[in-house]
Figure 1 (cartoon, one colour):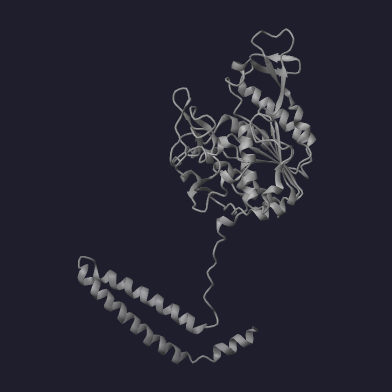
Figure 2: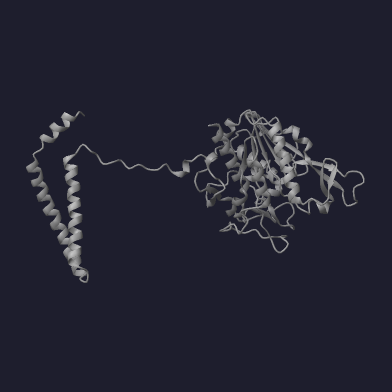
Length: 426
């Protein structure tokens, strides 16, 4: 609008008539305000009447001025409220997924383990006699984002023609089984999904591969609990040395991991005196036997070897690499050898939200020269004292507070994994 048009609009106003109307409006508003004030003064007699009347008059005057402004400039519309974009729409790839809480969700579980041929009997707690089902009805809700709802068909289409490889210990196998069972809910012909060698799912087999033939999708698992190369004891070793871990060499089956589109690692549960020194397994670097090397130091060295292998061997332009942090266990007692599975998650983490193993994984990954993503599951697992296998596993006489029931906590790891993958490719 030009300046002369504004001036003509201002001249067209009848100023005397306008302010006459304002004077009448102000008098009416003030009389209403005075009426209200008088009623309240009877109740609050101890307050100063002059102060109350002054405040009321001031508010009435401000109200009248506001109305006068809107009358003078009717073309100026009140601003439309602007709403902040909800934090829930922040991309999972940019969100600290580890910071959140478990919320009940009656739409869970995502599958029925008894109807999934790839769910190991030892992890199918309901099949093994567990009666409460509450542990299946929880979903992880990050503080600053929302994990997209799982849609098996959409995921299968987007993973068509891909090869997904999981490498690690039995917790990695649990995640592998969970992922397959989740995706099978989107397959019409279940016979089109099969283990490539016809093997039964057991913990003794070092390699398992499942083929989704309709979608040309492979999901493989390689058992490599230490990630580095197990070896026989060097000559002239002390009698207590039965075997070694070559901390400077990655597992010899690592060549089979290279040709992949998604590569997920884990390690940690076997890095204990029980699994190592008490079994006569010690550390070796080159030809040198490291009898006095602490487990924590050896684990750092092994991670460094793994990181160097990824940096020099994996084409990260093609392959998305993940490392899942240490999964919280809930062993109790003085020697951490008792297991009590609860009916509900803990209300807090009770100091289990961190572990030295996870801390070392995080440090190594952050220093790498190529992009590797962390699946930081330590804190979220710390709450889930209700989700373990307990006595509903392969051996009812031995309670298990390390492994998880399926369906259960590992499904959430996969939901985060898949949502991160999809966010990266959008």
